[in-house]
Length: 91
Image 1 (tube, helix red, strand yellow):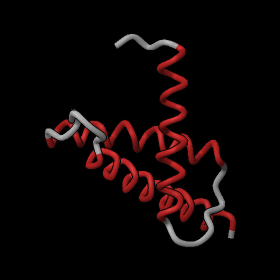
Image 2 (cartoon, rainbow, N blue to C red; image 1 turned 90 degrees about the vertical axis):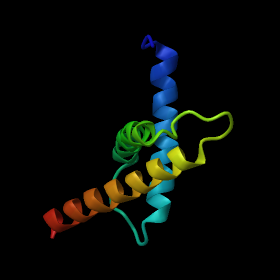
Image 3 (tube, rainbow, N blue to C red; image 1 turned 30 degrees about the vertical axis):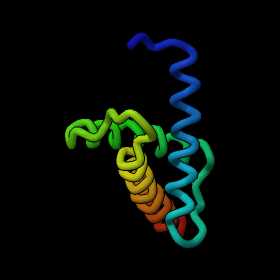
Image 4 (tube, one colour; image 1 turned 120 degrees about the vertical axis):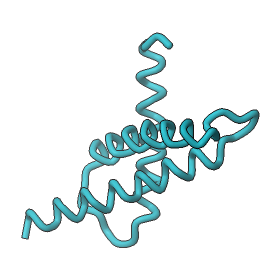
């Protein structure tokens, strides 16, 4: 796959959605920026894709619910870790 501007924009959009969903799963208020949420979402989407590929569930004929669930869970873990680390540093 060639990395084009469309691929970069699509990656940012997917990262924002995955990051936002991961942030919604984590209870309480997270004091992290939207940019950091998007970065966490992009990383979670990429790692989630790799895990789904390793499990053999990355490519389906419809909506890939298992892969998306893995990505959102990873984003939630990432948001919780980053919010926890940033919260401890500020106190």
